[in-house]
Length: 207
Image 1 (cartoon, rainbow, N blue to C red):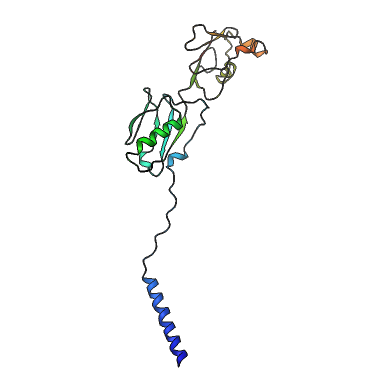
Image 2: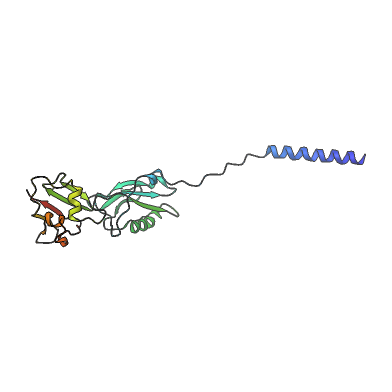
């Protein structure tokens, strides 16, 4: 008799526990960690060590967990970019990391703990130029160390009408152009004239 009563009490307790558990509201599913804005997956370039932001450069500004403030921007000729809420920001002459700190400070007016990344999509402010008797004259980005000979090769090489012994390099701020004798350099002579190009240099290949 005593055993039957204990068994009955145990069964009632189990039933009540089952009912109570069924009445509890379902627990929300665990939220996945915040994902970076889709722009984070876009193309990037690795800037050279001395890189600073300049006009025509394309940047990705990524505010983590605040995608509405993120933007893909091109630096205007006045050296500024426009961002949601922050409006115009002067960026020319800054490194990407310095810009990141500036944007973090400015965003504190709108976000409690802003987290910002600045990625370089395209570098268009660092250019050199080649004109005259080459296959593809024009402007070329100066992203890595490049010599006169390398730029000629990038431009498709000399045309059949080129005067390869009288090539010059016009350098901003320098009165006298630098001279470059393609034939000498090709033969391993006077290699010091095969200088590393600087931003704004123009290589002139006469005919």
